Length: 274
Image (cartoon, rainbow, N blue to C red; front, side, top):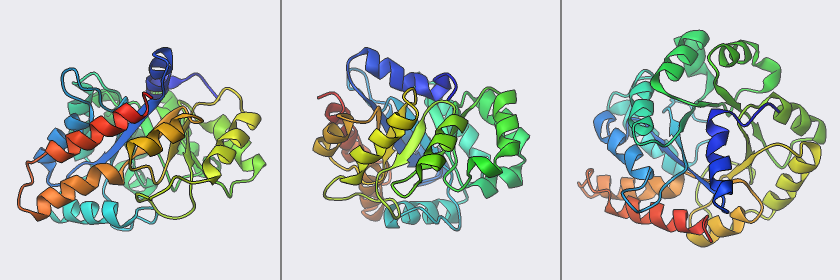
């Protein structure tokens, strides 16, 4: 694996403070494009209240094969309300203005349709750190490898409990920044308990690539779970738990109400600091 890269620095800064990093996911365009910029900034904390160390900005997609019900609901509404691929660059700029690094999580078809080098160029110009590509494997990522090298962007690929040792070694070697460990099999979503497979998966990753930074996602929803995952991972990834209060506020006719979101951010930020 190459150096920690733009987004990997968030993990290293957290480690320098004696803790682990919180990675927060929200999609651009929900509840609509202008309001989503405010929700993304809310992930970054407020004043003395810590927030996410790294923000993961999702691009809504019409066929989100890895997304659970919560993220699908938000993504569908965002698409219905007019979000476009190019809106992600404004979202990156909004987060970068807070001083918090940001990456984009996207299905590859959207990047391919936009133009791989053009997307990389515009992402870098907006201040983005790189891409998480859940449906792109290193074997098929030649264009992205070239574009990410040309524009100094991180490549975050995924591994799972079903990944072979050979696949884990190859994938982590292709990453720049960090590797995304999906701690449970299946789609995204909050869970009442964290995955028992997660510590074993992280141990396998570190045995095969001792230098890799590992973010663990899929299922974390409470401060206690965040603290548990923080014992063995470099970063704790949270998504659905941040979207649930936004969906509830939207359903209640209060799309501008971010109080509950901020409360969840505070609980998860405290969790990775235990």
